[in-house]
Image 1 (cartoon, rainbow, N blue to C red):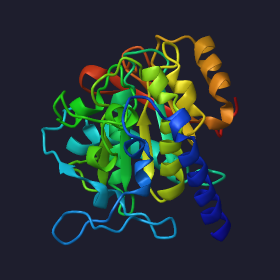
Image 2 (tube, rainbow, N blue to C red):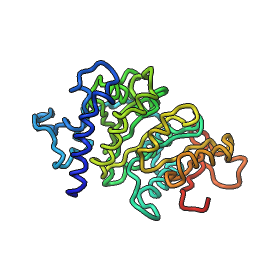
Image 3 (cartoon, rainbow, N blue to C red):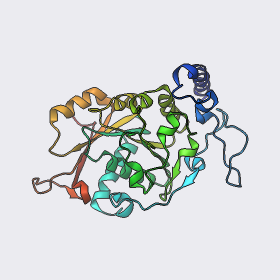
Image 4 (cartoon, helix red, strand yellow):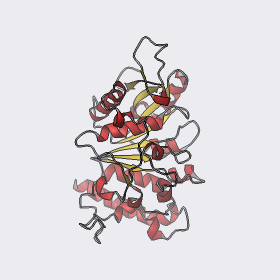
Length: 311
């Protein structure tokens, strides 16, 4: 642990030296642009924050201690793992969760990117339900991040207003990270919304500030699961930048609409070792003799295929 701590301290020092050059996205003062993980303060009994910054040697505060706001909006009916946890549809997400938590080899992936081949295939639906399913375990704390800043959707699933601030405000230096975390009505689930769509989402999500955020989440909160809703790689460059920083990737494919060739190209682009599995959404139950499960506007939900099988 000593070597890890030393490496983290060195990384933070080097990051601070580079902030003027690599993190100057807006005209904010340098103090506002500094990585907020260094100044996060634990809450006191009055519900505020203490004056002592968290040092690298101390254990970081859990997500629930970072939540600055609790929003109790009505959750979208498509969050089936919340509304209908005992259904066959919700069971499919428990299968995905089990494959993530107990891989056949190696450590469980803690930062998980969820993306799709093209828009409209249900990636946000999968990301939201997967995050809830993970949080329903006794010991799991989960952070759900909406990185689809062009068309943010996660806030709609959890009943937040369209005007809610989020990741875009942090990346432009207009808000500190703790002030953007939202505590949901679901125990142990925190959301970082996408926020107001910026004019330069690709640059922000590919920035050093974003890379540092993902690295910090992986390093300082390695006992938490981070689920990241990411735009399709076909239309944007953001997915590639984020993919390099996460432990694993789940591809969401609309059943029968995406060619096998393109799916194969996506797997090769991200790397087979990074692909945790492929989720087939909107499975056609009428055309299949196999199993498929209908739910809401998403049609049917077909299954999950991990990367431990043959190619």
